[in-house]
Image (cartoon, rainbow, N blue to C red; front, top):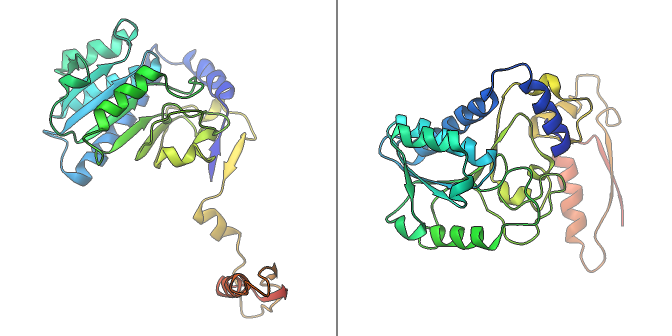
Amino acid sequence: MRRAYSVETVRAAEAALMKRVPEGALMQRAAAGLAAACGDLLRRTGRVYGARVLILVGSGDNGGDALYAGARLVRRGAGVRALLLSPDRAHAGGLAALLAAGGQVADGPDAVDGPLDLVVDGITGIGGRGGLRDDAVALLRAVLRDRPRTPVVAVDLPSGVEADSGEVHGEAVRADATVTFGTYKPGLLIDPAAEHAGALRLVDIGLGPELPEPPDLEALQYADVAALLPVPGAGSDKYSRGVVGVVAGSERYPGAAVLAVAGALRGGAGAVRYVG
């Protein structure tokens, strides 16, 4: 079961947790999880040592998470460069950590030459609204134009999507994977934003005890559905195994009815009643 909470709820939970942990602890937890996820992805296609990683950095804490994660990847032997959308507003601590580890800051997309093994999207976070700004769109296109097969990892959620509603207004990042922190956000589970998220990975930063019940959204996974299905035993009959009613197809399109009825039977229903 994937449980999602709204931006307002997440921020309240983070504020409560930050009162009980050292300053910067949550960002370090997020960065550690992000770096681990990036490392796993790099190992699938090659290796971390010697990998070429580009971080797209916005002005918020999302960019700070990406910069601290970049510093961790540098210490593991990756070559990491950062493209700062707003250099004067980049997260100071994260940027200092990246540079101290041996990472670099690229002057612009033209300064990023050659192939890349991974692009990290740290442009906007859960507070982003209304799609990407024009400067972010131009930078993203410039980076990926000649590298269409380079995997993209989004930090917390793809930049440009609406975290609460799942709506996409204008341009947004299309990620191959999204590493989200503390809890899922509704936009990661609701289309069309979910289509931009790719494979999801949740990093535990200790937020669970601060989150209320019930969640704002729940999404069943395969194992959850399987657990809900009755398991027939020796004394089971067609009614205890469930009866499925099907209203489908037409005289012109009988195939829809055939598929629906056959699917219900193959799925283990005890009986299928068809109207058509």
